[in-house]
Image 1 (tube, helix red, strand yellow):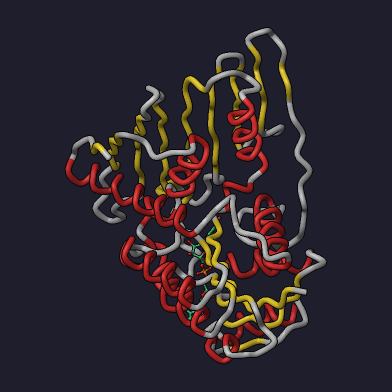
Image 2 (cartoon, protein in one colour; image 1 turned 30 degrees about the horizontal axis):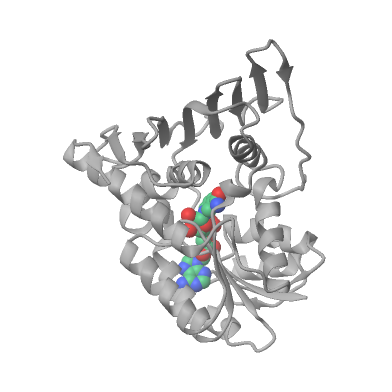
Length: 338
Ligand SMILES: NC(=O)c1ccc[n+]([C@@H]2O[C@H](COP(=O)([O-])OP(=O)(O)OC[C@H]3O[C@@H](n4cnc5c(N)ncnc54)[C@H](O)[C@@H]3O)[C@@H](O)[C@H]2O)c1
């Protein structure tokens, strides 16, 4: 049984708690949040112990895994605290706000011989897993064009509006768009050779909308758009279109079915993905999506002492690095050769 202490009882802390509660090999052994009432109500829901001081929970002997669901600017401090207490760690994405911080976190986990995974959930999301599978198997031939998009209303739901502060969240670029940057690197299995980014300039909310072209050495060009400057009534959207030699794979989270494969032979396929529905997941989410597979993978790999392969901390750091290079490209108005 993997005994987990969750730090941060906000949107993600609640989502993770819902998943651990469903997994037979994990037990929520505590939930910590500086907002006492948040820790208390989430802990009551899952019949566990609330903590107001995360350090107290991290020090508990019976807790062997610490799951960091804190605002990004706090990731480094708490990952290192947990590692120093000898706890295995899961940390929400993005790993950190700077590559230097990410490296310190990786070093602390290595030095203290604890396992460390960063929760890049899109690598575990059904429709993205489907794409990775058909890309790797070449079921539809080589990938020829690929574009993805992630659009959201302004995130005003975070604790003390931390998401709206670039110093705390990195803005839409580092918080939201990194999902696609990371998935593109994972899909293709390498870094692009060149990137060119533009941000939609908005003085009130800088880095709130970005467009990037990623050029790979085989000639493939991938585009990604990410923004969280839409009105509150706009339903969150994540989507992609991938054209292979033999088919187009078309995914949009707003569609039902969400994913359709249009083959050049004339065949049309609508794969069905089983959803783990729950009430009260939080945010705009009505099922556990990739979070279920992500945490199931994490708990299974911790239980059986298997190395993390789908996402390593170094991969999370490299995706952060690439996203920061997109910022540099946008700031300087130049294409960056990597
Ligand atoms: N994977 C995804 O799809 C996804 C989605 C949303 C957020 N995230 C990431 O998850 C992390 C958390 O985001 P969120 O949306 O849950 O934020 P949130 O604001 O909803 O929750 C953060 C919680 O941390 C608590 N907190 C703040 N400082 C603390 C401290 N020192 N000790 C203990 N608790 C403290 C706050 O009271 C709040 O309840 C971020 O890194 C974010 O980027 C990932």
